[in-house]
Image 1 (spheres, rainbow, N blue to C red):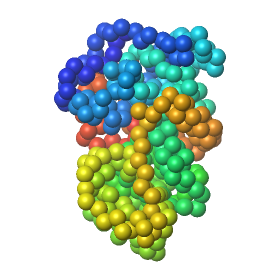
Image 2: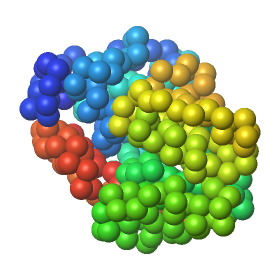
Image 3: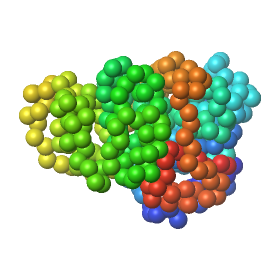
Length: 325
């Protein structure tokens, strides 16, 4: 099969399509003929040599895909050859075929094309497992999402609004903020021209928000804590701005704040299967009802993976970027 290989650590130019061996399918796995895969920031970090795949995972990038089941392992009962599916991966999506544990496979949501379904597994599992399953974000509460125009952000806006949550977002341009507003965001803040802490306080009558989903890390930690209300929860899913900072912790005691952090890729198979099952139960019906839509900015052929990475790292896009084998 053909796959995108990271030929060395470096810029997008190190991504090259090569002929490689087909994946070996385990007893509890399915082999998927990939219709599409979607880019995630983690792919660019892996390309730079800063994010090693978990032990046993494919060396090729790609944390989600959609496609058709080609083969099922002898212990797999839920899926059969010919099923159209999408899946959460530990790697290997940038290829024509990928093997994935059966517990990480999902049906294609009703009303969504096979191609566009590739945009959902990673964002749905990330958002649901963090701010909902862990931070217990509830109807009537307030949510601040940094990077509102990203794949994570555009999904989080839609699912939170559907569940009766007031949504605040930050983004770096008026075009991105307009896209967030069109998806339902209530308060849109340009972090380049506004102090998001002051705006959050202004919009909440000085109280602050209940939950924050953050991918910036260190530089935002103090500001995030200052933006939270009583019993507020901060969930960190990335360190795009760096991991180190100095912070005044007194507000944690004063307002009973909680700081949480997690990724998806290095979780156990059992934990991933649990998250996927929760997403199927709670999120898939909202997609089928048209309350959450796939936001796909652009699709590239697999051979143009480098160009797709350049687009992602340029941060001009809104939503997800796809690769098509």
